Length: 447
Image (cartoon, rainbow, N blue to C red; front, top):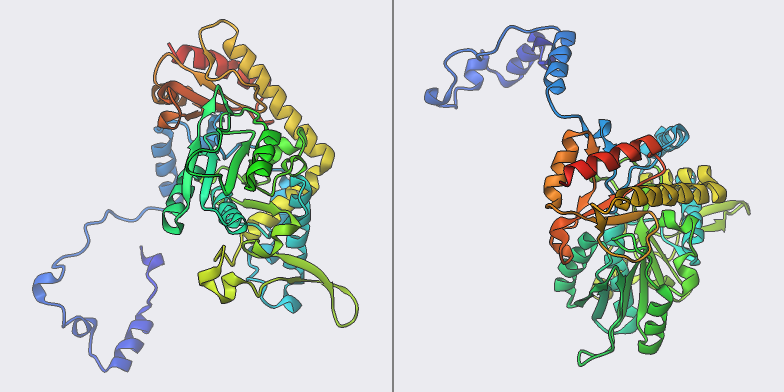
């Protein structure tokens, strides 16, 4: 341990001299004798660093396979997508990793330009004209979208599809308790949302829909848009950004606000974080936009420059009237997503989505081919699907982990019959051999 002790004998002597003390015993004389350690620490003799590493490798080898050594079929908001070396190399540059909040644009042009490019890419992805510089994650983006919608409509009743991520719905309920929002969950019918008629509670101020939804099914955004047109509600769509490579963007269906989780673009699973909240809206709601917004301008020499803009808003100067108090963003994660999206391009994003969808439908057909397992719902899916099991899903997940698979996410109590429901995600990283092995193992584990 001597290598790790910070004070040399000369350091200690200098300290004692400065304090006017004869010894370290005198330094600790204020500590009662009964509380002092009367003998040395009972530690084994030191060993070399290679020997320590080898010992811990032996201990680790006795464990079940680490998660990064397991084949991942889990999703539910965080997915095992490919992270190419170019994304890690560029986003990991020290200029981005160590950058500070860009309050001074004259010394932050690089980061501001990267965020501006990120905003441009996310706006194109969503089909809406305005994107902020990111939020913390998909859940916080959904909360901010509801706050915006309530402020815009002037009504606190919020209709939320059960197909929205359960964790995000829980966040809405938590925040709504403080803000006075009335959160009403609209149940799914065989995997898709059927909006009810307006009842005695009055029309909603905000309607929240997932596209595709948590069970992987494709909900009808146009029907939600018609509902909002009839009631004057704000339409918030929680969209899967990978699905944008295959389907019409939610903005083109008439969404007022589109939010999502950006972890899919260049971020590893990493035990669930950090994540990236995507947030876009129509120009009508520009002044209610939460967080930071980077704009393009010109400097005193007429050259292109970037600044944070529209900052003199309620969340900065009149907090009691604010629709949001978020004044920050996930810069490094946003830059990572921008690098990944620029690397993919339009064709690459479409190919990524197509590979996910093709692998998902191959796995789904193989799982249900012999009739032992069945779909949890029958609605069409895109790149994720739920399986109804004959035994509790928690048991199956544990059995599959012993076989080297992260099998999926148990649906649990969030859906009727969910104790035997398993949400399975298949990304472009999964090979045919891995899918075949997963199908065989899951069929066996579900007996």
